[in-house]
Amino acid sequence: MKTKNIIYWIATIFLCLGMTAGGVQQMLQIGGYNEIVTALGYPLYVLSILGVWKLLGVIVVLLPKCKLLKEWAYAGFFFAMSGAFVSHLAVGKGFAEAIPSLILLVVTIISWYFRPQNRKITIQSKIL
Image (tube, rainbow, N blue to C red):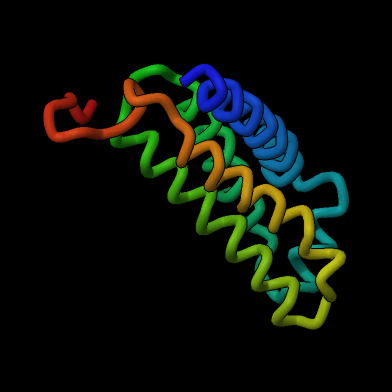
C-alpha cells in the first residue's frame, strides 16, 4: 500500500507540474505554443481553452474530494495528451516532438491507476 501511495504521489506531482506549466503557457500563448498549434493546424484560441481547462484539472486532481470531477479531469488530461500525441504524428512532426505529450499521457494513466481508494468513485462513495 505504501509503494502504491508513493507511485501515486510522484506521478501526480509530475503530472500536475507538467499540466500547470503547459496550461499557463497555453493560456498566455507564450513559450512557442503559437507556432506548435499553428503547425498542427489548430486555431490559436484553442490554446486559451486548453490552458484554462488544464489549470482547473490540476486543482481538481489535487483536491481530496470531488471524485466525479476528478474522473473528468483525468479523462480531459488523457484526451488532451493523446490528441496532442496523435496530432504531432499525423502532421509528420516526428516521434521526437511527440514524446512530451506521450510522457504526460503515460503519467496521467499511472496517476489515475494508482490513486488512493478515497479518491476513487465506488458504489458507496459520494460523487461530489
